[in-house]
Image (tube, rainbow, N blue to C red; front, side, top):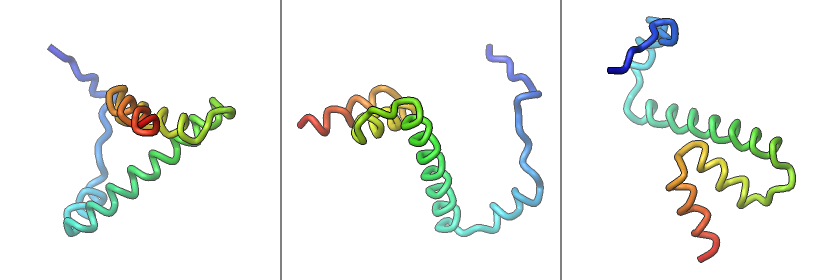
Length: 82
């Protein structure tokens, strides 16, 4: 059985929750996509900092690996080789 440490759980502010509930489906999706893009750019910046000599393709494959796992990254790596 997994034990969850309550000190590691973030509680959303009630005003944030209410704001999210008022959003339309489209607004919610747009916000999710913007958040994902921000996360992708942050990960990409970190990868480029860690590996300044890597090609754009190598960086993108590593970003995909970090965000989506090894299996998806393997597909992305093979796509360029095809």
